[in-house]
Length: 385
Image 1 (tube, rainbow, N blue to C red):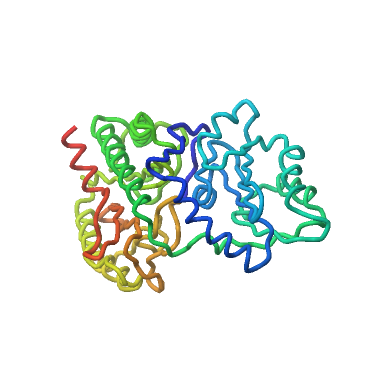
Image 2: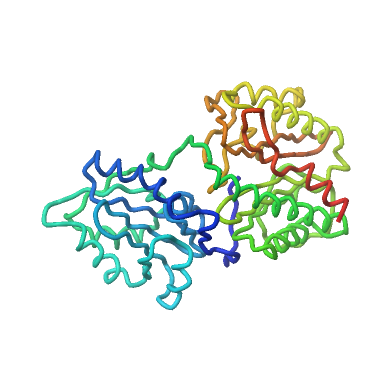
């Protein structure tokens, strides 16, 4: 689920070697080294920004708080990381990555061109690129000016493993984050039950997550009776109707999410959605295929369509990003693998029965789906708070 992000991103961004030792990044960059050897590339450049930093975080552990970051990884020579922050911020930025050579991207010619001079020779060479489709035109122009005719750029986005299982260290990090997501969703629901409007309740959930050092929190709420979800607008309308909201939390680089429904006015739709999610979780195991999972999830909805905000999908992989592919659609060909984590979600909207969406983030294991956080957990925790 894509939504707006806060203007100021806080939380703990320090690279913790106890969780992710240096050899983890040696394993990850091995694929880049093999590709550079195979294609004759002198380096791979990896871009990410505050909207989407999955590729940059995967290879460098760096997550931009604001604006952008770029890892410069040569086959021979020292790596460098540039970020769009002032030079006074560099000591703090160096705590976020295994790359020791971190510089301000505001001094582009000094910090990029000096690195390039040690990598590119007199003859034209090629660099692989990852994440460059996110790059803003102004930075792209600066880069092109620096490269001139000396370097040709070749898209290498497929080097970010698209269908990979999370390694045990990564799963541990994601599991830790789901606890915060569960509690944040419970806080959102509690605020709603205490009489707050949808936006005020969402802010309470966000505040709760940030108090536990979440790096980023993104929310959506319904302001039209559950037919759609919208990002924060600051209207702070009074509580009305039933609650339908979404909260996603990033902790230690990894994302988890929950749909929150207080459907006292739509019990029939909530019952259908919960039955669909239960069927989906029961069918989720290694080698399960998207089309079969989709069919199992929507069967309890009967003639009612899947809620439009789900865009025809009942799940997709999550991890360093909120959408890492593998959409579970009616005609999809995705296949579940052990060690992957999926965000599963089922719900609908009907003129007579109202709206409800329920969800679960679950790890795929040999024994089936292991639920890490869910709408049901949030509702239960909310009652106990």
